[in-house]
Length: 166
Image 1 (cartoon, rainbow, N blue to C red):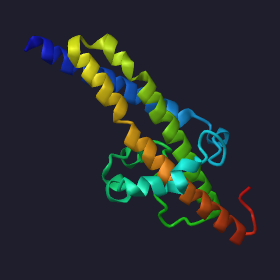
Image 2: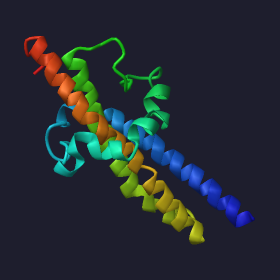
Image 3: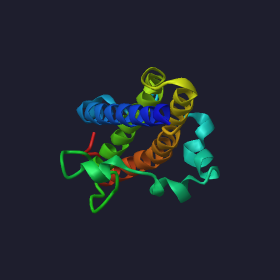
């Protein structure tokens, strides 16, 4: 029982530290360096501009997933991941770039998940590593699903506004 409690504590502390560091890093990343229309963020042919994710029922579950921006918005300049009242091309471009940053952060979290093999012990470290790593995949899917739609909206609104956004 003691080993289980120590492993749970190690998981909570490690995941907490990783989460806080990922949040700080994500906020510091320069949005201008993320191009939603270039590799690796542009949609791949097999994704069919999000259609593959629709077959996985993403529209039903994506809004039920936790969204850090809902909680961090008040404390800093985190961009809320919703359209709200701003339907300008610039806002849609910002949202598309935010999906790139979010995807990059979730890939980084997936890649760093083996740190749990060091901070935990026994078979629980393997289970925690796999589950923590895989838990980032739905968030990556959400970004890849939303991004092509945001880029389309950005281009449409930008052309309506006389191409002022780029």
